[in-house]
Structures are given as C-alpha cells and as structure tokens.
Amino acid sequence: MSMQDWNKKTRKVHKKRRLLVLLFICLLALAAGAGVGSVAISPADILAILGNCLFSRPLPEAVSPNQVSILWTLRLPRCLCAFLVGGALAASGTVMQSVLRNPLASSYTLGVSSGASLGAALVIVSGFLLPVAGFLTLPLAGFIFGLGTVFAVIAFASRMDRGLQNQTIILTGMVFSLFVNALLTLLSVLKQNYMQQLLLWQMGSFSGRSWEQAAILTVVLIPVTLYLCCFSRQMDMMTFGEEAAQTMGVDTKRVKLKLIVAASLLTGTAVCFTGTIGFIDLIAPHVARKVFGPAHKYALPVSVLFGGAFMVLADLTARTLLAPTELPVGAVTALIGAPVVASVLFRRRKSEIEE
Image 1: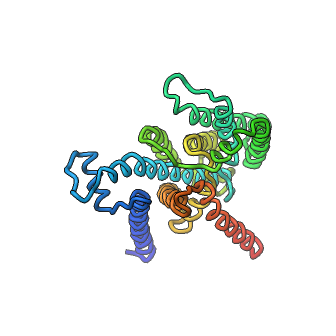
Image 2 (image 1 turned 135 degrees about the horizontal axis):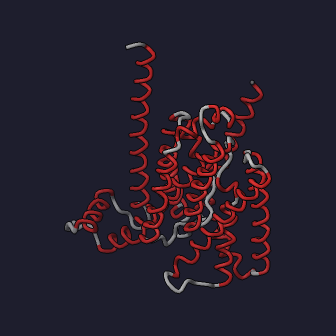
Image 3 (image 1 turned 45 degrees about the vertical axis):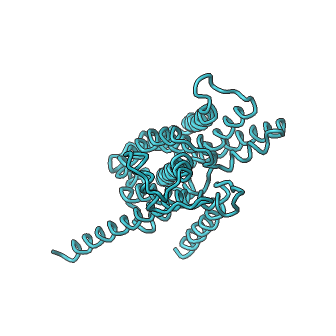
C-alpha cells in the first residue's frame, strides 16, 4: 500500500470516528432536551417511558404519571421538532452557500422568512382559520407566502438575467425582502394591538409543538434533505465556479434552480411552524466544513446533525435560562451566532489581505 492510499484510508477512519462522536452528541442533546426542566427526568426513566408508550412495557414504580405526560406530550415532540427544524435550516444553508458561492448566503437571503412573516401576520391580524384543521392555518399561510416570495425572486431574476448569475439572485432577494419587510412594518403600525404577537412569532419558538406537527415536518424535511444529498457531486463542482462546472458537464442553471427551490422548501416548512430562527443556517455549514472538509457528501449530512443538536440545545437554553420565563429561541441563536458569523467574516477578510 502506497503512502497516498494509507493517508486516504486514515482520513476515512478519522471521519467515521468524528461522525460517531457527532451522533453521540446528538443523542446527548436530545436526552438533555427531554430530561432537563422543572420536572427532571433521568435517561433511564426516559427509556422506560418510551418503552411503555411505544411497546406497552410496564413502568418502574419510581416513574410517575406526571413524568410520562410531560415527556410524551410536551418535551419529546418539542425536541423532535427542534432537531428537524435545525437540521433543515442547516441543510438549506449548506446548499445556498455552495450554489451562490457566498459564505453568508441562506434561503433567508431570498426572502423566505420575510414572506412567511407576512403570511403569518395576515392570519394573526385577520383571525382567519381553516374550517378543517384550523391549527394549520398559520403554518400554511407562512409556507405559501414564504415559497411564493422565493418563486417571485427567481422569476424576476430570470427575467433580468437569463443565466441566473449569483449576484442577480442575491440582489433581487434583498430587494424583495426589503419590500416585504416594509409591508410587514406597515401592517404592524396599523394593527398595534397585535404587535407583540407578531414580534414573538418572528423571534421563533417551539412552545406547544405537537406530534402532528412533528409528523408533518418529518414527512417533508427528511425526503427533501435526502434529495439534496443526491446533488453532492454537482455542488462540489459548482464551488469552483459555474464555468468550471459547465466544462465538467453540469447544467448549472437547471441544477441551481432545483437546489434553490428544494432549499427554500426546507426553510419554508421549518419557518412556518416555528417562526423565524436565524444563524443556524450560517453556523452549521462552516462547522461541518471545518471538521469534515468541503466535500458535500460529508458536509451536508454533518450540517444536518450539527444543526439539529444545536437547535435542541438552544431551545433548552431558551426555556431554562430564565425559567419560568421562556426566551424566544431566535434570540438565543442570534446571541451565539452573531459572534461566529463575525469571526467568519474577519477570517475571510484576513485571508484575502494575506493573498
């Protein structure tokens, strides 16, 4: 075996070990999210309650019905929703940064959060509810308006630039985001009685998540994330530039459209159930690439795992730091994420100066 083959094999072994460590961290985060709170539940009791609820196994005498209700009805669906949303935002951020070749790009850049916030605001102000499954009215409105904004951005950008250059997409997204935010501000001023409710929704929260919402998130987010993983090779090529990718046989315009729509679908689905939660889609991709390298066959799934674990821990911090007062989880992620993003910008600027 040559030295090159040995080094390649060693790197694969190290990556597998790091992946196992990350999976263990994810399990610890979920256990902490489910067990820590005003009523503490040990990992052993969590397993016993899961066995009882899923397989009808008898409960130990030390486990009370109150603990079963808290874990199964409140904390587990909340933790699952947090993990799924964090993973979805992280995957979306990884894809958008690669496609647009911008370390600060995300689906939020294209106006998903602005559109979703406007849709949610209209529902909150109007008080409209669907005749069937009324609890889905707010998420559905946020989803439709969020994706609608993205499609409007893509349509407008394609009319301006048939090649869909990255700068055109980013600038168009910024213009639409500013316009939609202006409409949202106008609505908030006209309906000041709802301003606090609108502000809380925009800061994000996992309070009151249910198994039904977790199931909807699972059905949408997991297949779309797996779909994005199928484009790992094309994303690797596109990181070298669109012209280089085209010479390697990549239909950049078509692939870019598919990836942007899929990434926006992830963000739109996540945002519509929880409100706007920022910085996860910026932090997770950089951590994944730093630890596992730039190859998307590793970076994308690792981003999902890290983003999910980070979101669970951020939600745990939000509900326990100032208990019984619950902080908006978006505020917690912003407090942690802002210094990380500033560090990324500083390092990038420093490397450009050195070059």
